[in-house]
Length: 122
Image (cartoon, rainbow, N blue to C red; front, side, top):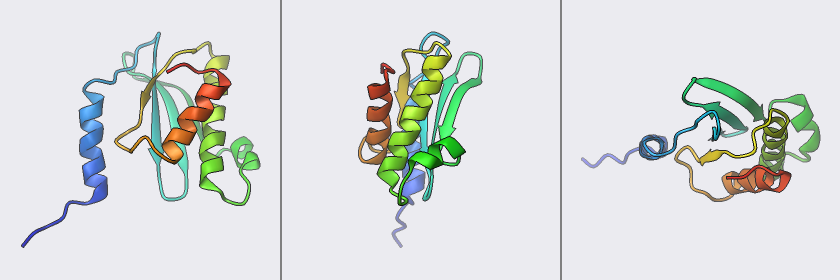
């Protein structure tokens, strides 16, 4: 009997391969993105000190105000802009982008594009 592996298990395998090379330092932390069915989350992480420096998600009230009609692409753009603004306020200008095993397409690319427009450099 052939068993098809789940998409999430395949994504986790991709994420493990990505994390072998993508590493956040205090000078250039890692921008990690997570997608769930209804929400999107972004964190700026310093892997050397094991600290989350900045985080934003669609659950925050200031981000929810910017989202209209439940459009997930607009939500991803709002989260990208919010995490970039918070990072720039803390003096973080450069990050390493961690797509967390997801394809660089759709909501992930929209989040990254919005963060770049605000002024975060990848």
